[in-house]
Length: 164
Image (tube, rainbow, N blue to C red; front, side, top):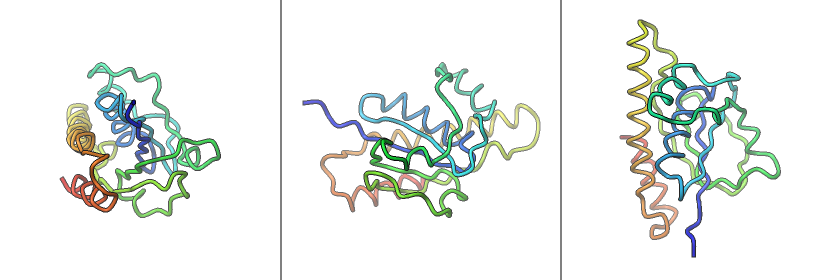
């Protein structure tokens, strides 16, 4: 029997950089076990160009990434979410909609690479560092033994991953 695919939503206020990177990473390394989504409370309307450049340089297909509202995931017919991760401090402090599926949630705060000012190289380095941090956390997450640990234990492990 096939293993359940878990639905994971990454939230950031603008849904243009961190949450897009997280969606891409989980989509690649968790492709059989996880369905990856991202959204924001105040979406920018499009992914940050440097986020797309980085993903393209790493051979991701970027055509699917859109900056969208988290309201899309609270509507009837939306996927029942198993996990919701906030990846920016603003989104973590906002009042979220009620998510279908009563998902587990955790905060994985990561500095905003889109806020970095400087040369093109400094901005690219900030995005690369954000990608590295998210990749490490998501790799740890996908390797958790989901079926063999209880909800309370899993929630603690998710919080621990967020502190890395």
